Image (cartoon, rainbow, N blue to C red; front, side):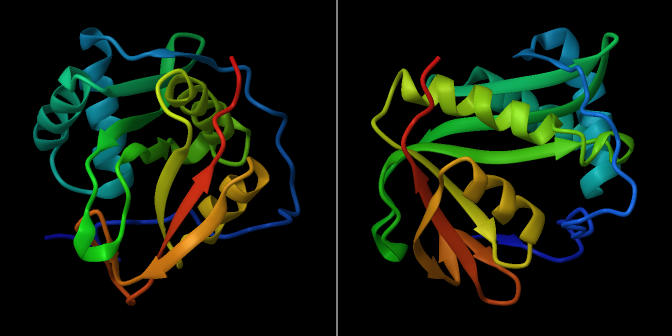
Amino acid sequence: MNRMTDKALRFAPYVPRPPERHAPASAVVAEATGDDVPALAVLQAGARGGSAGDWEDRIRRARSGERSLVVTAKVSGEAVGYANVAFLPEHPADRAPAGSYLTGVTVAPAWRRRGVARLLTLRRMEWAGERDSAVWCLISARNRASLDLHRQLGFVRVLFGASFQGVAFTGGEGWLLRAAPRPS
């Protein structure tokens, strides 16, 4: 079982009303290419820990999935964020249904709270909507910034529990959320 630990997952600090607001980023969101993978791996290692080499392998596998997508957000040609979506089979042990799951989003610290995660999530919702009647995601109950973002985009909590899709949540609670796909 994959375990999401506090050390492995460094959530962005929860600041619902930051004292200083930055202008929204003018990021270009597109499907990640093989050439993007090294920069995305460095971004992920900086945000989540681990080695860029290990992350590079994981990102390449995610890109090669038959029913998966890796997207990147770039500002002036520089990767400032990326995210995944993948079809996951039904997981009866924790009642998670089969479907298209948003499986992670990472934004460089300097670009957080500027709409980059929202752009990446909207693109993944569009892509999933071309394939499925629902979009799913798993979020740690401790990741309040991500929960707020997904609620704003129409996600609703379906279940809460210690694990979904074999992912166990430190602190014992994760949320399984569902939304209707966003039209292109």
